[in-house]
Structure formats: structure tokens, C-alpha cells
Length: 236
Image 1 (cartoon, rainbow, N blue to C red):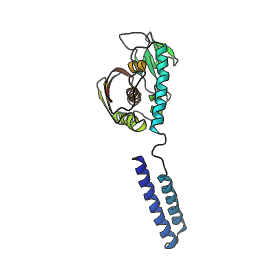
Image 2: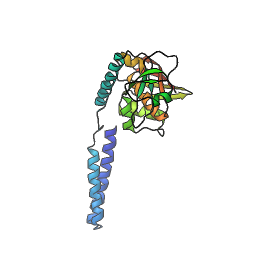
Image 3: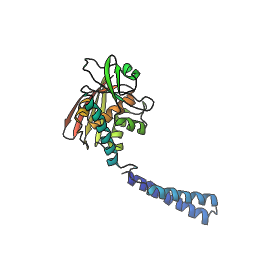
Image 4: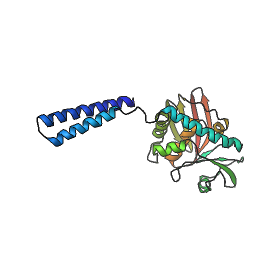
């Protein structure tokens, strides 16, 4: 669809420029307007040649998968089993913390934000593992902020930027966030990542939600059925 939009826009601008250039040169004898018409032809021609996507979605998914496998290696090394907490971006970078000890209460967001940014740290007396989820760079590249609508932002990143699923919906009710994803195109084979961080689309949705809401987002559960999945998060 993007290719069609670029082609239509480019063709229209080029045709307009050609008409302006001809009329200005042969009938109005105006060199400035003729130059403007030629410039429009060049702009339109350039738009026609634009690719459908600057980075192929398959390549994006490959990079995401590699990032997940790197995090999976860390989770395996530390035998992490608790649910992770996604934090809003700080200095342009989003991170998540995974508790390394069973605890009836999650560390507070304030303690996690204040925790030193190193591989293993401590928050509210609980050892935590810091990881950089794949959604971190996507949030930065998409320039998401509090001004972005939550559902629109999640839909945009999951269906347009990464094309990880065909549709996504998000609903916030009190301190709960429910993200419904349909037509998921990637399988999360990293067992530890799936348990602690959620599936790949759910993990990216959590990073987006933390950035837009400017709050901590913790995975509660995820229910997958075929190519559809519903993830529930706590908004801290």
C-alpha cells in the first residue's frame, strides 16, 4: 500500500510540474515558474522510485529475534523465573528488570528507576537482572511519548514497523493493561524469555506501553491460542 501511495503522489506531482513548466515557458514566458515546474517533476520522479519499506520487515524481525536470544542467554545463566518489569525510557533507553529471587511483592518502580544501571543490581532488597528488551530501540526509533495514543502506538509498532501481527488492541482498566494481538507471525522459542518477559509481540507492546504511559509495566500472564494471544500487564 505504501508503494501505491508513493507512486500516486509522485505521479501527481510530476504531472502538475510538467503542466506548470510548459505553460510558464511557452505562454507566460516566466523562467521562475518554469523552474518551479521542473523542480516538481524531479520531486515527483524521486517519489515514484521510493521503496515500499526502507528496511524489509523480515530483516527487522530477524534483528528482534537475535536480540531476544541474547536476553534468553542471560535469563538462562541466572536461572531467572520471576516476571519482568518494563520501565519508561530514561536518557533515551528503555530497560526491564527481572527479579532473581521469589518475592510476594514486586520492587517499586521508584526503587527500580533509582537502581544502578548494571547487569545485576538490587531494588527494595531484591536482586534484579537488568535486560534491554528488543522494544527499547523500537520505542526510540518510533519517537513514542506520552502524547502518543496507547492503542495507536502499539498498533503502529506491532503491525506497521515490525509486522509481527495483523492487528493489536489495548485496553487500560485501572491498574491493568490488556493487549490483544491477532495473526502473530513470529513464534517465541526462547522458553525463559516467554515466562519472564512474555512473547515477542507482548514484550514489545510492554515497552511501548511503558513509554507512552510513563509508568512501569509488569507482565502478569499471557494466554496464547494458535496465532492469537492476549497479554495482561500490571500498570505500576
